[in-house]
Length: 261
Image 1: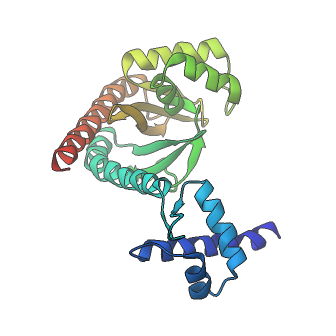
Image 2: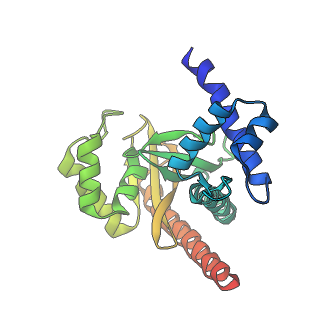
């Protein structure tokens, strides 16, 4: 019942935002109400909520609404992810050819990591997942490199607040042991996962640095019988090198874009 009730409100909100964006000088409550055939009180309620969130700005003299900074920030974030995928893709493909295992690209999204691209292994037996899949922030190798990419005290506060949860028998749930692994990831530039998130699966991950911040990561995943100790050691170097290449290209693009501006 709740979903059925909320969906029309969401649709109206997007309709209002679209109309505001299409107007050269924004739009008034009366304009939106007339165009969308929605009561003025409903439009006013939605517009007021959007204004509080910074999604729209109201000009007190003209009483017109225009798009706010929040939407520009969201749009910038979306475009940065598209740029990241385009930049990382050829490097991921090359890493997959070297590893013969699936290569994942993900970004931190609050308390999760969202998979935004995958280059699947050519093998019949492989690890894969739908793009958009979210995994817990502290899961396996990915969690370690993300925690290694922020100040240690901030990471510790985050872990204390969220807790370490067990996924398999190998999951590290001891606070001190986990941060020993995080320090290793910070020192080495990569982290490994030995059946810590999924039983029978190993992974190697490395963080990507874009515009001065580590906000994404690349990782290689395969089944344990294939991912031998030697292969893991080799993949650790290759994954770190791939992450460094992506980071370098992102920063080069950022410098170029700033010069153009």
